[in-house]
Image (cartoon, rainbow, N blue to C red; front, side):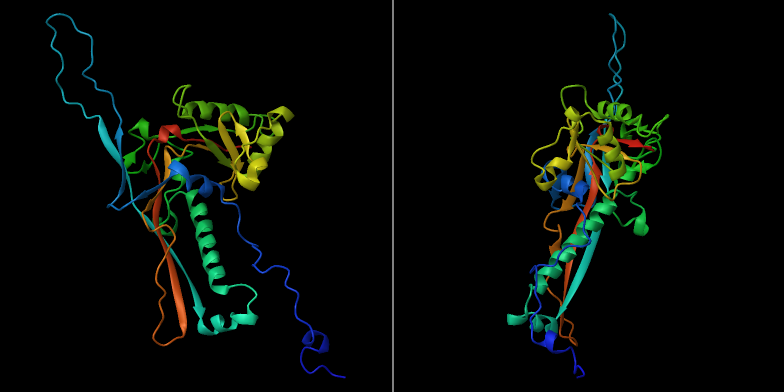
Length: 320
């Protein structure tokens, strides 16, 4: 007997729904964003034309030994200035129609559609943020975050970053060294990591890098160099606790958005995700066109990545 539509078996049974929330098939663990969007690395400011930070960049050169009737310099010496960066804006929208809402009500609902669309949009923004945090700040006509490729550069003695010319002012340069192999894969990695870690540190007592981020390939290369009793992990990282290793005082893990062959040593004290207070993934009131039964919801963020002291940030590059 022919099937009229979908058949007796389908028509007589409800589908078995294993989960009542959509299973995420696309999003990753955005480790750099997670590290910066908590604690002192996540800074809300009420406004301003630029993101700025005053800096002390020079010694007072009038200081000198002298004898008896020598003339002591009274020259005025400029020792203060500032870094400045522009705000960057991000936005995304989702739409939901009255038909979708009506179908997604009562007995016909498997999961709440509107909150799920909102969560998807927020996760999509996080994915974009995390990718752009690793960038050079030049994508989309330079409307994106000033990312690590600019602030923790592979060529730190060139370019103007945060309005300071690094070719002219060495204090504005991050630390950098090569991690290229000599004979076997990753044979120079640990030595390069030691060098950058120590260069980023302010002596031995304080201001060391607190975390490092790299690619999965480099992370596995580093992990393969360790002895069994050196596989220290960092507690408190949730489900990722056993995936986070330690190098000296810095926890280290990988991020899928990290540029190939690079390992960054970072410290939220000196690298900050600065956002306009009240704008971090802020949902705007729903907008309904006069000629459609559809609501459009927009989420906006105003922020940028900012360094207060590039000398305390470092990169191992060209790792093989």
